Length: 330
Image (cartoon, rainbow, N blue to C red; front, top):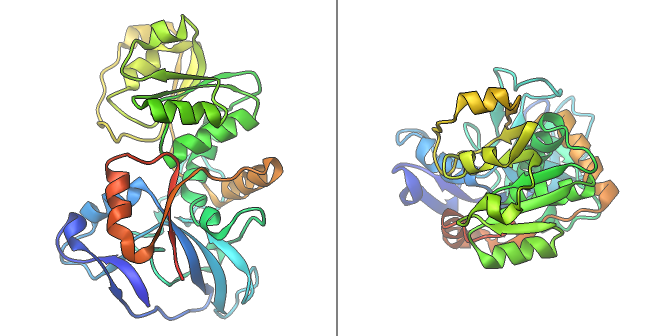
């Protein structure tokens, strides 16, 4: 099969498009002939985490396609079913945190940037009918991350004021769509005028320049909920916009892992700081039901042929995208 895989030197230098053998389907597994896949920031991190001495690894966590082989004992799907890949391995129920055996498709096991993938059958989930193949191929990881952060952890409710710093990523655009569907008033930030304008077109109520004075731009309005995915570059700005008793949920640190906060202001403000990452199979089912109910489509940035993987990786590395970057797999 054709695949985008990493082997040898860390980073993009170790990434190749070429031929790899297909894996055999064992009991409890299925093979999916992939139609589309989705690129995530995680795929960039995998290029540095995959060992230089390790065997070739197919990259990618998101995908959608048709089941073309079913292993012994599989009853939840059949050959010919149209499915999406649940990227979370071994996290079935909505628990406080993922279990110790939790893994993500694309490291340590093979991922979705290939013509096919072999997975546990429970990780093949029925494709939402209203989504195209390209949309279905990008929805799971980012949509699930957004859903857990917003609903399970953030407990968003109708009428709440929600701030999403750094609009542009796939997760951030899902957060915007989900929060609006839930009846929240949504504020976003970006350095890019183009992205701010696009966010308003997508339904954001207010879009502010992240390089300006946030408090001045918000005219003193404080947030009930902030969903932080940028990291050190924006965390304290985000915290300042949170009302007393409000909640900040963080799931990303692309702009720095370590922050310093004023603890006295924090505890006198009775504020809540919650971590979040990915989500369970149960929450994925809830997320799919939510997007079907509200007929939500992922915001698509660009779709590339798998062989043109370098252009796609360069685009996400430079944070040029607004929404999801996908691959079409013939």
